[in-house]
Amino acid sequence: MNATANAATSSAPAYIAGERVLVRQVDSPGHIRTPHYIRGKTGTIERFVGFFKNPEELAYGRSGQPVRALYRVRFVQSQVWPDYAGAAGDTLDIDLYEHWLRPEASR
Amino acid sequence: MLARVTLTLAGTFANIEPDYRSRKSGTQPYPMQGYHDLGGAAAGPVPKEEHELQLWEKRVEALLVMLTRRKILRVDENRRGLESLGGEVYHSLNYAERRILAISNNLILKGVISVEALAAKMAEIGERKDPLP
Image 1 (tube, rainbow over the protein chains, first blue to last red):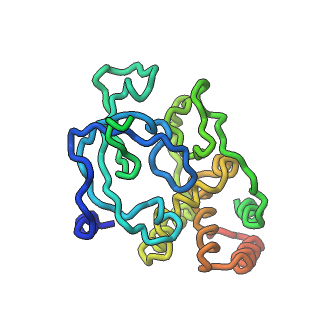
Image 2: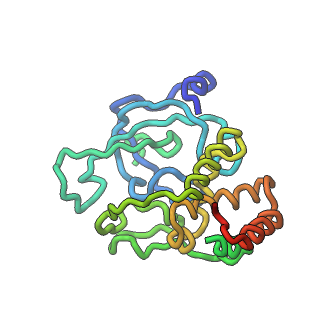
Image 3: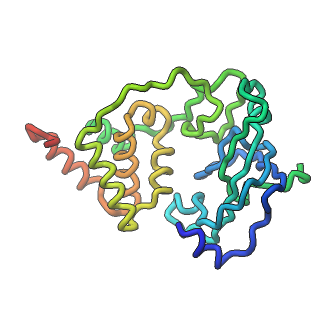
């Protein structure tokens, strides 16, 4: 996968660093890369990583097109795990595809 | 292991439900949650003993590298193969066993090898005095 080459064929990413996003709460079949524990949680876009072929399509031998925007999204650990025992400021970064995110306001 | 692969290829692992037994009590298992999606599951101590790779296990990795470089198999397809073995089969096999089983199923699915040819080769190897030199 070549993020730079793919970017030329794509529109601009929908989110920028610092925006608050909600991970879609969907229990779907298929080759999903979004872990269940993070669905329905709210995080902050840490960075736009690039455009990549969609692994949900590649997994079944298809082209993976159109490419999808991938973001590194930062979550506060204590908001992810109700019984989190670590430091209050601990965070967790997860790479998530744009079609799994919604603006926080849509909650 | 070879016998187990033969059994699996014969289609005996149908209808295995996702395994939620290791999930932390109180967490809600989702119907579509795969056995590979373990975040939040209860976990004991991490086993730290080293496992020295056997020659055949190294060959499995070499085979996978060759298949992906020649664009016969994508890493995403291999992951899907691993995640669709069924929890019971997946957890009963070691790392390399899972991978060669997923590779075999994918190559059959893609028409690269046939069940008959693979079964015949495995039977032939099973006859050898030293199956894995």
